[in-house]
Image (cartoon, rainbow, N blue to C red; front, top):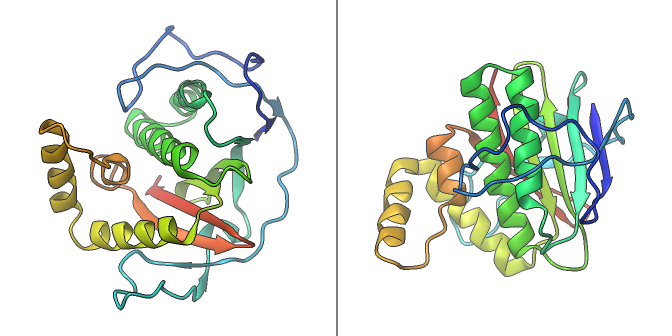
Amino acid sequence: MVVFPKMTPGRLDSVPPRGGRTSSPAGGTGGPLRGRAGATPPARSTAGSFSPRAGGNGELPVATRPSRADAVGRRVLISFSCEPGSELLEFAHKFVEAFTRLRFRPVLAQRVTLAAYELLANALAYSSVSREVGFELVDTGSALEVRVSNEAVPSRLAMLVERLQRLGSDAEGVYLEEMRRSAAGMRATLGLARVRWEAECVLEVVRSEGLVTVVARTPK
């Protein structure tokens, strides 16, 4: 496992990706992160999670089952945290891209890289400034999970739940709608739609100890 302590700009000390600069899923470029290998991941709570298809009555769905990533046998491959508003998104993208390209087949690496970029971008842009944003890439044995945790205000959480519900019922429709809005110069929120439609990841939310974790899961 590669564990990244609290990140600060200007310090990079991990293996760089092969082939130099590459494009990000959202059109940007990035660089490697710093890290250390061999650290033991912290214990995780058995937080409940809910499917984006649940709910629909104006209230937040109630957590009813343990998150899959908390099951015995999970392996945390990458873990780091950074402050909201950080400039390190592109560095994180490039490291995840290089790491997954070395470890997994190309299609799987591309899905994970896109999911990591978009979920982290959302968290860094919209998280509460009082707590850090956490990132994990988890191998559950049968799937890979990108897990991004942050503190969200209730209104943001409600918007997130509503959006995941829409993506769970009509991913293609939401994706095309956001593409049209973007092409027309209107404000668009493509991130989650890209993760669900382009990367074909299942999306869910885990709530625990004041944090909201968005999970993007793709089978291996």
